[in-house]
Image (cartoon, rainbow, N blue to C red; front, side, top):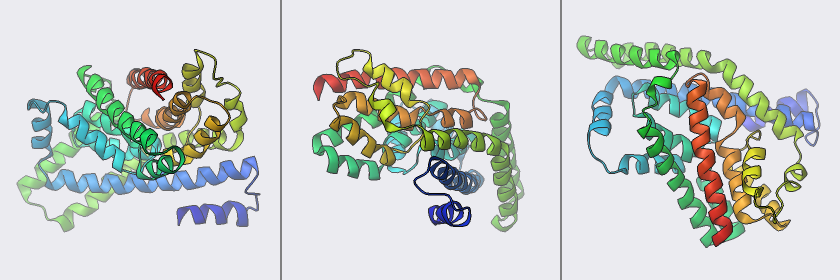
Length: 322
């Protein structure tokens, strides 16, 4: 429905050609802006209801005090794998987790895996590369989320969350306690939940627009041939170059699989191509722009640097074993 509206607005009303760079970029911008704003509002409402009725403080204390032997990271990573979100679409749910006080490392496991793996991309991988490569892709994406979340959780990075998201956490906790004490009904809570959700949307709206604008420009104007020329099969540095070249791009895993197929067909090593794909969907500049509302630049750098190192390592491993 959103895609149909974007097509109607850009190609029918404005009259741009669907094959043109400008038409493709504007179509991408309209579609993703509406989709992410809707997702952010919907998820903020859902998390507001959850925070109002479920003992989030007990869940948080359980995750932080019990020895779960890493199961919490695996659970968050698997949840990320089954949610069909790109990196920017995952951020609303990430904000909801942070708002609910879920440990940051566990939340990072979700944020890492969610854009890397989804059921559509798995089906496309299966049809394109076969079962063995698909299983390697699936398990490596989940493993990356588990390992990345666990390591980042050990760094105690909560102090690098922005004052905006800290204020949301405090407000959510005090509001929930007040409702419990006064036994406020759902009918009277809902307007407050909707108002809080819209406040979150307004708080990150400019970051959403800037981030998607960057992604739309890359989507519409950067040709695939530019990347093919720089991912030579006989260069030892092709994997890190693939990761660096991928960061300005923005696409979901399902959208980038056909591009990876073209790369491999033209002689790019599969490990290099997969490292490129993981970087496109998990390390995009638009994602970093949106995360700026939630994280300080230091935390964004730590997050991106950790995942970059993991992706480069996986790329070299894939090139050795595949």
